[in-house]
Length: 290
Image (cartoon, rainbow, N blue to C red; front, side, top):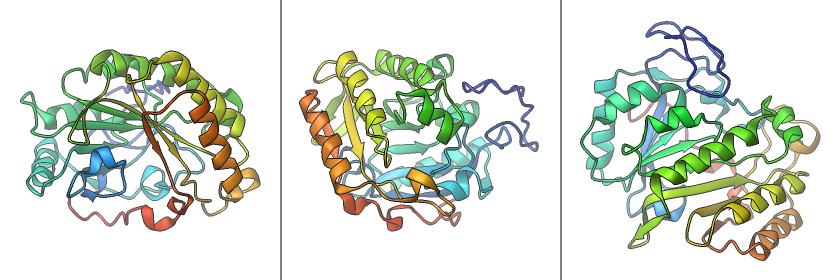
């Protein structure tokens, strides 16, 4: 296929056996791990964990990615749609609180085939970078119950520097509005998120102004009870990181971001302990569960 699924619109030819484009993947899904994942937000984990499938490749390719071995390093196992459906079913049978599809955008057509038309007994979660095309998201309407987008940047300069995507906010803000149009205000049952939008933002060292502008947009765009917001402290410097990204977020930086969040009136969601900035929170991408 000539791929235009994401905002890069690179027009690469991606077939079952031919990888290409910014994501560097073929048209059939490639994944690096399927597991009951306990380190998502509490409303997604339940008793046994979120049923996470970590897809390989990424259209954004941030230089600080904690999943670098699979997003950019080529690790992964090719899957067919029937095999992927079997993985989904196995995770549900193991007691997964949701189907957590991590970095799925570049495999959208085949994931939809694997999901099928009959609703699953647990919510389907679209866990993505936020760098999405609304046209692609519209293909998911009625098939995805929970959207879990990052909102990494509101300023063009860090988006350009760290992800080569100066237009990130334009696309991400439009994408989140489309996600909210589909799901409406979030809905919880017994502490578990059944439908809605949960926006994540990772605080980056030395980039508090970017964090403030992200929070401003969310607080000005949505009313209390519309969306959930997760302010993450878990940035971990990756090998070769330089400049601002060579250190973790300080306690003072994260306290400032959390205080700004509260002052803007955002109460629905999560903050993190700074102990979350540890490599142990990133799974081993050893192809298990596939």
